[in-house]
Image 1 (cartoon, one colour):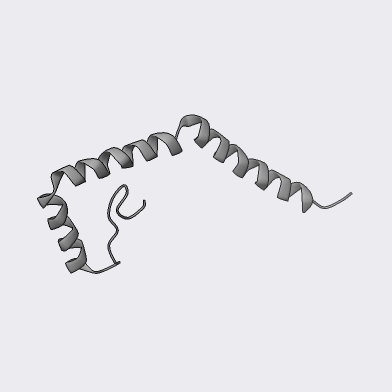
Image 2 (image 1 turned 30 degrees about the vertical axis):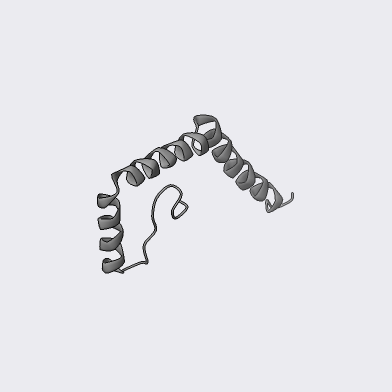
Length: 74
């Protein structure tokens, strides 16, 4: 998530910061809706089934390549 583009980030453990951001979004529903649309578009673009397949395939391929490299030789 990019702060100010598709949502808001808060400092970890800072409840006052979280409360201020929630109040800001409640007072500006248009901005909250813009964040929602931008976030949805980002997820739809970055997490397609083809992309998830490719990322998963790459992980398994890398693991198998490492296993072959470290396999004992006869």
